[in-house]
Length: 95
Image (tube, rainbow, N blue to C red):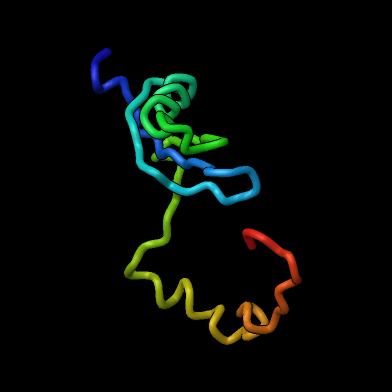
């Protein structure tokens, strides 16, 4: 298949049920089915995961580093958003 027909897909793997998905890399594929199968073959060869997400790179939006001050600073004045005010429940895992 010509490379110009392939899109870049970002791959996220969940290592165990209940844990967050983590970005593990990217790959080229022509559609979502091919992306999912390629992700399985490339990133879970040794049973590293329990779930796979694939997302087209073009569908991901990101903040710009030069805008970080205006984008993130407003949250610094809201102390209730910091986790120091919350008590961790006994027996809680993966929070």
